[in-house]
Image (cartoon, rainbow, N blue to C red; front, side, top):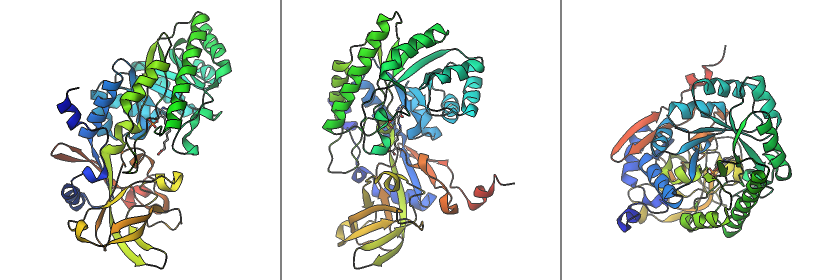
Length: 415
Ligand code: LLP
């Protein structure tokens, strides 16, 4: 990449880098709460990944953000899609991803039915995490191309709830992986690869060391499998590449990560990675307006129109998201220590505690950073609260890509 390209594709986009004036205009036009996703930034993130991993199979983990505009943007870059459900497989197919892989974790029958139906007209690879998934696929008349998911017994990530690598729910224990591959092969499946995933949010030195250890472990396993006479096309070392949620955190050095991965990767096969968050997190902002400002002895409670139903990550993982006042005179205001809360009657409904914010007033607009990954995806309708709208930006253009849900929508499925 040229130095000019580096300058236009920084390793991270901070909340402060978004134009406050533009975000105010969007909030006026589309109302709040509103997710904004910039597909140009998604392209930049994809380009940086491709540059760091020039010859790897890169499959986007659709679960991070499966809005149509995002999927179409990533499909155009040539990445494949890693899907966690039949729904994601169908959506990835509609977005015209060339390679679609379904990672079957305890797959419900309805998902297998739908995926096998999809496979009638489309290429698909299915990653199995339990041997009985093969029985269930055979029962449906499918014995195509599979990856075997290995439980590496190595975990990493930003929270215990997302460290899948040490959780027995995921994958076949490493000690039985070779046997599982041989079994699948003998049964007539084409075993094209093995796969492992340590967890989500790899950023610090400890997580990077875990990633490296995982790459070494799956490489060794691939060697054992080759010794058993089965040549694998690819070895996927999963996703999980982190992004800095705090402005004070440095970004992940993706080139250093790629170098470490290459050094640890000794398999005689293509390297596969499946990043989700890295592609989309800093391409998204959540906009919310202040409903209420309440000084209390402990803190100033700033109630906004987004909460744990809009962005579940703080409630679920104690995740930190930067919060910025987007008022035009933010710099001239005194700051207050604020607790930014949502409208749900639960004490977990807090988007940020102890934040120094320019004295918020009713109607002021706030931006919540890094909302592009696992934001809208995990939004829900608890408290009969409709989900927000999503607007996609591409250069100077903006387009509503998901309309705001209504109370009438919530009753749509009832008989
Ligand atoms: N591959 C597999 C098999 C996965 O399970 C995941 C994420 C990924 C790839 C992508 O990981 P990423 O690159 O996005 O870190 N809701 C949580 C994250 C859960 C991730 C689950 N698996 C959050 O908001 O932090």
